[in-house]
Image 1 (cartoon, rainbow, N blue to C red):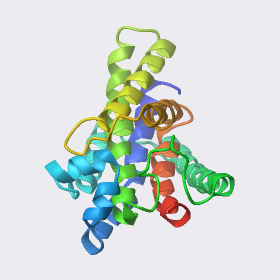
Image 2 (image 1 turned 90 degrees about the horizontal axis):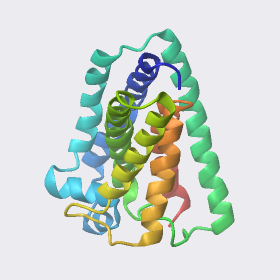
Image 3 (image 1 turned 120 degrees about the vertical axis):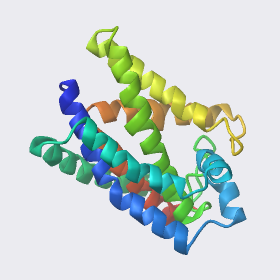
Image 4 (image 1 turned 180 degrees about the vertical axis):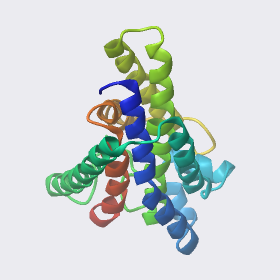
Amino acid sequence: MGGARAWHEQVAAAAALLQPFALLTALLLFIAPPDEVALRAADPLVRSIALTLGLFAIPVAAIAALPIWLLLAWPGAPALRRSLRLAAVGVGMAIGAAVLLRLLVGPRLPGMIPPEESAAPGLSAGLAAGLAEEVLIRLAVLPAALAIARRRLPPRTAAAVAVLLAATAFAALHQVGPGAAPFVPAQVATRFLFPGVVMSAAALWPGPALVCVGHCAAHLVIPLLFA
């Protein structure tokens, strides 16, 4: 993971690399907003945001995160180069994983995978889900949890605690609010383990750009492969 400053610079770089996705999300929400059927099929977090703040709050939050992170840790050239490489790897992994899953399971996802991971929410709500989760978890909850944990714990223990807290927040955010998902243990476990634990750990090392960009890229590929 490297030092705290170096990692914070990578988070700032990841926030910058999310901007094309934020602009694309805003454009898609403007020209092709989800209808009632698509919104019912959308990610529970997206539904809750839609019913409270409105869907445009998602790209606005992503855009607002950039100046905040630039003030906290302006990324130097090494952080930018590393983040660009990781972003490219993240896109490749997202495409490869989606294609492999499609070949293995076909166009219908198994029950353990939350139903919003499909074409049903439509492209605008689907991309909004990936963007919202990255802004909230990888740009906010994970860095905050890590900063607090490092004050009291050794670095490795602090990292583990931060990952578990981020994963818990990820799963919990899908179970609360006006758009909350029904409690399906297998789907809660999937949210906690993969986008929660695995992706938060990957955001610590090799770096946040891998996860932030890869996750959003996956939400562009998913509607093409899964019904």
